[in-house]
Image 1 (cartoon, rainbow, N blue to C red):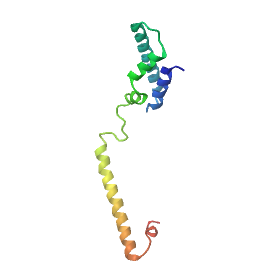
Image 2: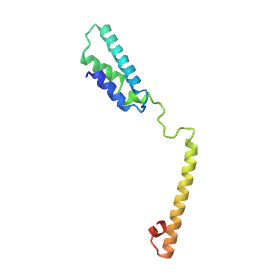
Image 3: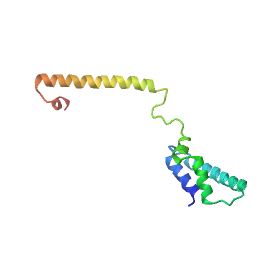
Image 4: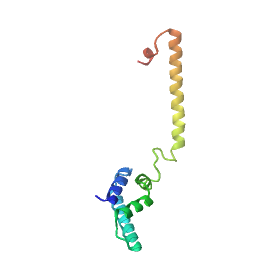
Amino acid sequence: MNLIDRYVAEVGKNLPLLKGREDIEKELRSTLEDMIEDRASTTGQLRDEAMEIELLKEYGSPQQVAATYNPHPYLIGPRLFPFFLFVLKIVITVVVSVMLGLAGISAVTDTPLWAWIL
């Protein structure tokens, strides 16, 4: 397995997409092979490992290349984020209020807090 194949495999591991991964790997392999052939013909040198290493360094790390195929890595999209914050504030307020109420009741009645929860 040459360096380009290993590089493409590493990019494939870091791709967040399940569908289209093989197509992206084929496209990337083809692009890198074309670039290395162009470089070899331009410089007049034979294709060797040093030339592949130089090309792959210029192309970038596999993690960076994989990230370019998923420009919006959101769990919650920007349209829903304000609503998410609103609901989160309400939930946190309710949970904290209930816990403080239970703690106050348990302090007044001298019963353990876990007795109120269970």
